[in-house]
Each structure stands twice: as C-alpha cells, then as structure tokens.
Length: 361
Image (cartoon, rainbow, N blue to C red; front, side, top):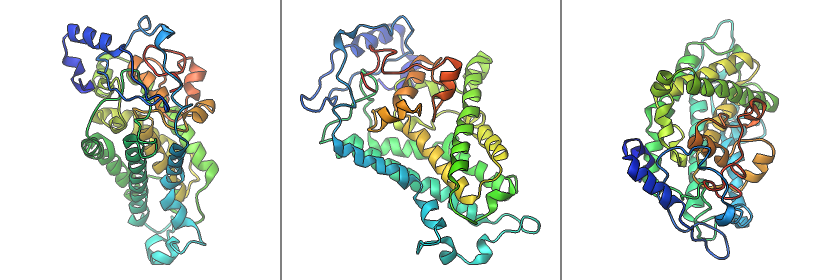
C-alpha cells in the first residue's frame, strides 16, 4: 500500500501491515540482495516497537554489494561536470571560448546582473539531476548489482513503482524545482546576491563550497526542527505532507508543500549566501548542484555503495534519513549528521531499530 494513502487507512489495516512487514525476507544466496517486496509500514513506529529482536536480522547490506556498484560513485564528480568544464581555462569548453565577453563581464558599480550566470546555474543542477537519475536507474534495475535488487533500507522492502512515473512526479513538483528556479531567478536578476556571486573569474573555490554546504545544512537543521516542535499547526501546514512517506523513495525528495520548501530550503539558502559572501559564480553553481542532488540521493529507498564511508565521516546517507521519516524525532540533518550528534538527536540505522532497518544500511 503506497505511503501517501497511509494517513487515511483504518487502524486495523495498519496493524495488519505491521504484522506483514515482519515476515521473513527472501535473499539471493550469493549477493544478499533483497528480492521480495513487502507492504510499507503505514504509520511511524514508536520507540517500543523498534526494540531489538535480532533473530531475523539480515546480512550486512553493504558487505555483499557487488564491486561494480562502486562505478556509480562517478556520479559525484559528474554532478559538478558543468562548472568544472566551463571554468577551467585549459578546457576547450571554457566559458571564455563559448560566450561573448559582454555576456559575462560584470562591474558591480555599473552593471546589472546578466542572465548567463543564472541560466548556467539552473543548467548545472539539471545536468547533475540527469546523472543522478541515470545512476539510480541503473542501480535500481540491477545493471550495477549483477541483476539483483539492491538492499532496501527498510526490512519492509522498497515500495514498488514505475520508474518513469517516479521521475515524472519528481521533476514536476511545484514545491520542488519549480519553486527553486523561481527563487534563483528573483534573487539573481534583482541583484539580491553578494556582488562576488556574479563574477566569472577563477574556478570552483573548494573551501567556500564546503562552508556553504555545512552552513546550509546547519541552518536547515534548525528550521527543520522548528517545523516539528513550534506548533502542531505549523507542522501540519508545512512539513507534514512530506512525512506521509514513512518509507520514502528517491523521487519523494521534493514532494511536500510550498511552505515547507520556503522554510526549510529557501530561507537557509538565502542566509547561507549572505554569510558566505566571497563565492564566485562557479562556486555558487557547484553548491547548488551538490546540495540539490545530495538531497535527492538521501531519499533513496536502497542503501548506496558509499554509505559506510559517509557514515564514518558523519555525512548524510539514505539510512540516516529513513530514520527521520520513520520515527520523526531524530536525524533532522540532511547532508551531515554533525548537528544531530551535537544536539543528541542522532540515531544510527545500523543499531537503532533492527526490526525496521536492514543491518548495514
């Protein structure tokens, strides 16, 4: 039963689904990949229900993943392919070779913002999304996993759906990319960004990129937690629509509400830009593409090959984010778990709820 129908289901049906979700899961003998899909749990699980009957725990989801799946790690540099290729003076596709100087030269004292930077920034996110969707399509279909379904985050199994439907839903969400494009267009063309953001000089500034990602996630942590705790009415009108997915899929990343996107994404974006004021256009472009595409990946219904390394570094993984979608009151961070660790709200899916999450995810 799809998650988005869960909120209207009778309680008796919910209980029946919880029972079905604990049925044994069939594994392929050599890869440990999950091959049976089970019904999705209809409601968030209480702390009591998560407790630790380890008798049916699954093999580590990462230990048996085929090495070929690691080829998918190429998606990370590919997310940055547009700013990397356009900003390098040694590249035949350098922006200086492709565009007239009048399109990108900018004097902050006399010039108005020009649309080239905005257009390339939006294109950078779109190119990153293409690579993320290509990777995920090959990973989900078994091309990168010896024709086996990857290990799902939750023991109930990944929700069944048609890939083309998921992709169409993901890309057409008004509270997702449509609102983000509107925000970028207004803040760019109305000269609301720091002056350095309009400069094409140099290439990606890696320290500033890292600072933007950390600050964005820190502010987003605060806004996310406030949505949960300030009032029931604020939560209902903003973040609750996104939480109807207690077993999310990758394509649920931007499926929520307009107030939720404004509070938890756009306000942190504007604060970040006005605190980290020395970025050039390439760094801003790289930040936008990395942020949007990482936010998409942590909603994956499957464990990803690099999750173990990311978790050791405190970086966000699908397993970490599934804990939030299932229990609501933990793991408010997205790209990093550092703020949850500092605030005492972090719970690792590896140890927290073995009845709910596959071991190793």
